[in-house]
Length: 265
Length: 265
Image (cartoon, rainbow over all chains, first blue to last red; front, side, top):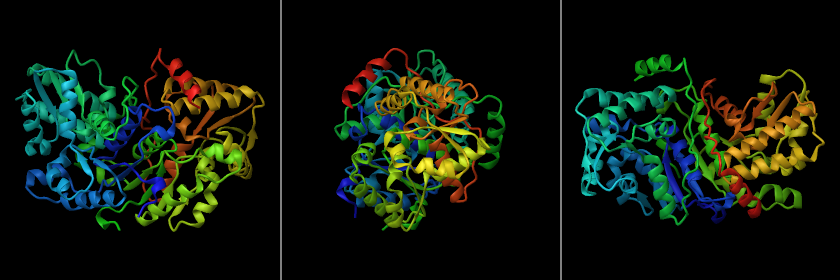
């Protein structure tokens, strides 16, 4: 169904949320060791923000997002991709069922992240800034423990509240306020003994390059990890130390947008 | 061929170049007046960086890019999109032939840009920072004149050389150096009497948010114009004054990458 001249190698299930996908596409491109257009990986991004909320489904114990995710996997396979990436951690709750119905390999973001943690840390305690859905799903806890790291679980309720706020703020477009909430969560993780903190929700990857000094805490970006894994899997060289996209902090209008986001959610 | 639950409304022909497409997707998302994922437009981006060089084809008088562009239009139509956007100015040389073979409306970037110029300027002289292919194609000159603006054509050879350098530098990933070259071209445009300058190549849109003070010269971003036109056409509200993506200028390593890009081109 697709002409060979435009066949994509990587399929991306995007829109979960859209800014997180744009961040992934930006990082995939920036991290490719290329000087000209045709040295980049051909991709297709299916950005489907209308999908039912993933965390809500996991916490309520239903599989609402599975059917449209399966449809997305099927469409990407029909377009002839070799691999699929999902720059949404929470959607990986349905990974096994999706992978079972895909001819193209689906690169698991959890495996990409564990490889990324190993690049920065030999052993130690890792905190996870993730949705309540991802935490309830448990795939990160399993992988982090199996890789020989200790999980750091801050007991302070404020930690998860800051994480939830930051994610909602990115979805509402308030990047500056989201970065401030993320910095507070990182601080609480460090107080709880973390050596490294995983931005285990791709909404938080959007603010990764905008974070201030993290006081020695190693911060792992799940979108960057997935981009590296995707490029490596497809045989593209990865370029390090290039500026990653950021969004200027806008002073003054963040708080009101945050309140609007709170009302809307 | 696609399930209704994930049907995209906007099809994007991307990869021309990839960073310009990522910038377009970022701006489309940032400019959408939305607080939650499902308030965003569902899109599909077919990123095909392997397409033959557009400027080279136009200057040599051949239609090499037309067949793969037609294939991309056909694939996006098969996916059921209502509209198509091409965040590549030069590819619009083949607009008429592509539009004639597309059920979905293709939004012309030139029309989007003229509307954007009108938002900032009533009358005056407009310079165009574009590829030699776009300039040879002539669709901007026609539209800008028809809209009642005067074309400003800097005669200094350095102007087009700076523009060419900036575009190649973005493709090579050297954003800081590209911004510096773009600033020099803008300065030459102003010296030549321009009231406004069009970033008429979407590679230059990538550095739009990184430009320094333009001394009163109005700068029009063709990617932002196309994003606004796409959202408006599909009935989505446009949000103003949100931070757009930028890439930190990396001091020290830009020049060597530039030299490498010169060798490669």
